[in-house]
Image 1 (cartoon, rainbow, N blue to C red):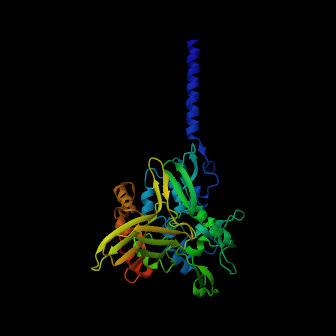
Image 2: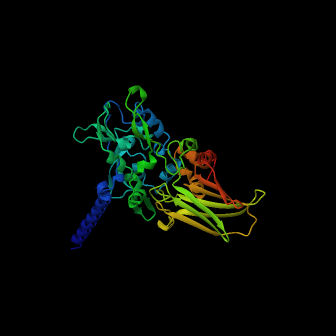
Image 3: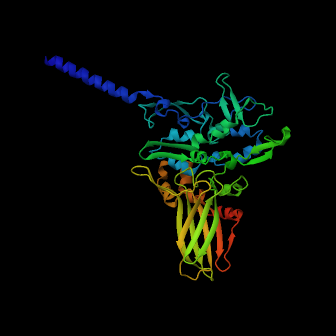
Length: 438
């Protein structure tokens, strides 16, 4: 009897271990874990494009020369090499394969293919080597093919998605302007909670749609320009095209990109509507006139720092006040949005202060778009040991290499004449190119 009980206990234990191992080693598909989430998988491997070769930005630039030169200056082209991103990616808590789905979105750019998740755990991806890995294409970040190349399921050939048509390119093309315009939302309009401290919160598309505006993302971030879509030697007609600098909030990924920001289409979303100094109060009014979404938007850690200083007749600063516009989050132990005073489209922000009893002759107002706080970049420098070369050395010199913020509005208000003088944006961006830190 004891022998039978022992055998049964052994079988029960073996069965339990087997079930436990099965449940903890079974492979669950990505679609099961992230149903309907486009960002959960990269674009499938793209074969060489007829008439072009590998679907790299460099090859596209063989004909689309001007567009290619603009793209090389864009945030998209720097999506992988972004120092802040590389620092975040290297954290032990980073689900790297998910993050890369937006920063190098085509399977050709990935050294491995994720075929599933062990026990549905996104920290335990099953990876196999990618036979179609293209290291040149990987370095291109958000490359042309991200929006413009797809695989035809019937012919199993790559084709280009065009927005206008009416030409005879050497490569297969299908015209689908709506697909191009909607592509932005796949990465720039997603809020998803992975766990208590890992949250992506990008609601730019939702903010835009809520305004019922006729504008698309391209309306502002890819301004229209009349030109040929290809190099002059191909003798193609002049038509309406879009700049491909993809200018965002005016804080580029490297300091040497500042000179091109305005040329490629940047202008602040907010404008300084009024500075009013009367009796015992000071009022500064900012209006979101140019952005059909909230400002700031996207990365929840972006914000505007507003600074008002009072200057006496000797040119000495004798008064200073600051405030911010943006979101406030706590990230540990649980990620949570604490407050949000961003400005929706066509709305205004009133900053009201008590007027100081000081001999002030001039008030100077500044609005600074902050992408990265000094305290955050200091932490990244301290934890650079997680980062691999060559990015490790760059993270260690982050303040010298990586723009943290941009001065986007500056205005002087003369009390005696009640007149206002705004600093030209071109002058501000010349200064931004040498500003360091927050």
